[in-house]
Length: 423
Image (cartoon, rainbow, N blue to C red; front, side, top):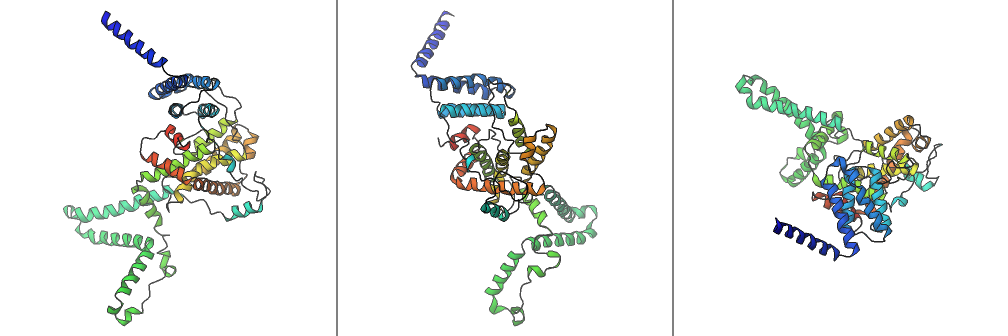
């Protein structure tokens, strides 16, 4: 026991000697990283209480003018993310900004172009003719009726699967007389879907083959022209009949991690650059509405770990959150013809939730910041989508780097901040 005690004492002395040899910056870095690691490795329910010491320590670093390094800030952000609380994240980020460790948070919020006034309704953008013309020229927000798409795709797959099953196993159950009908149904369904959605490809392919073998065709066949899409019955060839089925099958069968990560990167980039203390990889209406309502409160409940939020119950604040919600949509439509990973309905749901909340909490400032009717809400959504697209295009390379990091599967919120700060 005596030898064991001597070894322990020796190890303790060695630890003290090693720690004492560090300068103040390295000491603070080591302790802050260790305190944050305890929060990250601990229970989520106790994350808020566990952040008291890390926040107090970085406040002490600020008062001593000791600059925090990337390693400790990454740990602090990851530990703060465990609490899933916007006020705590705002506190940590504001302290990191004051420390000088981060400098890009919220730097692009002044680049937002406010929506112009187009009617008696008076948004915050003024009456600049160029902005009004831009608003009027913006395309509509993409439709997303994924429930109908999936239900029709499932119905189609069920019918096709049933027909195939009868053709394969019908003989064992005396259903041979049914197979001609199942073959007919299969033929009609598959042919209709192929012709309706791939009409142009079929026509172009047929024309190319006919041109290559023109000398072998009889004279009567040379004068035959391919039918035009507009002349097809029931709108066949335009995708209007079965396009929903194809989109639904694409949605059900598509698994694209790169696509998901691109949308997640757009979301994180938009939130960080616009100064929104919420880094959900998949933004949703509920979180956005909760952030706005929480920001109306003037003071935090627990000043030890919670910070003050910028009031988002304003025209500018609403637009910032809308841009955040629309960023994944802007990213996806810039690269793909169909929305799968993102959902434009979240932005409209955000406005609807806030409208309901403004009545329940009786907030005049929130009510005044919201669109007055559906037409103005549509203008807000179109403008937010355009601003999100512009935001992402201006920093395309940075967003791509963020997407690649997320695709690796191990990137945390702190790692994302490191990329956004060019560490």
